[in-house]
Image (tube, rainbow, N blue to C red; front, side, top):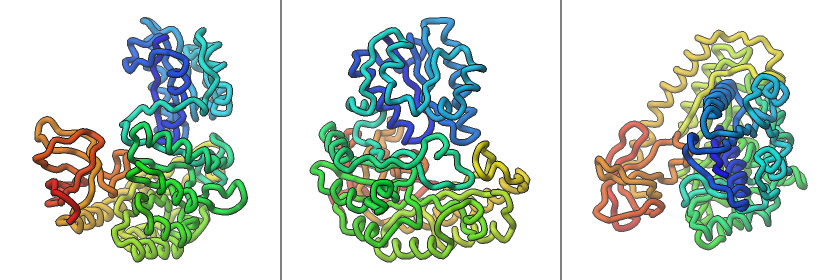
Length: 436
């Protein structure tokens, strides 16, 4: 059967999609990339925030139009299906089956029944079929979340935290590296809490040390760390490793203790500042990335000023800002959304304007340095290679590197690049023979 698969949302959702592709591939089904050619389409949705829900609904409706042609079956899975299944089944009869996240253990049987072809019921056991760049893969070390941030619907959708056993992760990582993966990006809703659900101990450092010893891996990056769960031994593990990048993705959400408490966030402003300072001291070349929220209920101008001052003090390399939006069934939904939309946007713009200057200055500091770059493609117009350094995660929000070279490279190769200038979020340089 010709089956098209569409993946929406975050990297964690992408891993679910790749597990789906794995059982379809194992079952001998033909995966097509053009929706118009598909006899069945499976959409893996996100349902976390309003914009993601809108994108999911728009995609479903767009694919439903193809039922006038070759398309016979339309299936929707993922977070949206989990969160709103009864309403969706009533309002969208053009969808043949909605599959909730908690049904994945029986996904093969459900697909077999819906599609009328045999699909192996081996979800999560069949080898993942990587859907992106073959030199990079996400390694999901846990699913669900035990944190109860008052604005967040993830625990309602994904449930409590469930860490993947260490031996399973090591086996999967070794398998991915044997397939040619050079960059492993560890992900979870809260990566820093890995293993805590098993014995109330943090096990991320131990896992990283074992991953670091795998022959053939080149880069290991950890995404989604909570500031109160970055102990000294984690910083030291990254500092003393061979392959773990000094990249700290720490979504702190706010710089005001008043707001952190209202958001039900653990830790404090002083802890965030202390951990950032410790990282910079132990790893002078470290990259720090974060996200902030503006306009949470009760946010004052004083709170906003503290957000700005923390941004100035930490000097984040990368920073994104979201304006608060109410999500039903979360604790903050009951609070009055008392910050006007225009104020939320103005505060967001204030932070982003400040961050633009910080980012420019931090990029300028890299000019003259030589760093290793993972090549991802070549621009046919300029003939410059385009890639990422340790500064850049693979989610297309950190910018990239462009460089000239006399050598011929393939995507997935590494090269040493000496930076000569910066333009926006892009570092520009020239390949050199080795690290200077």
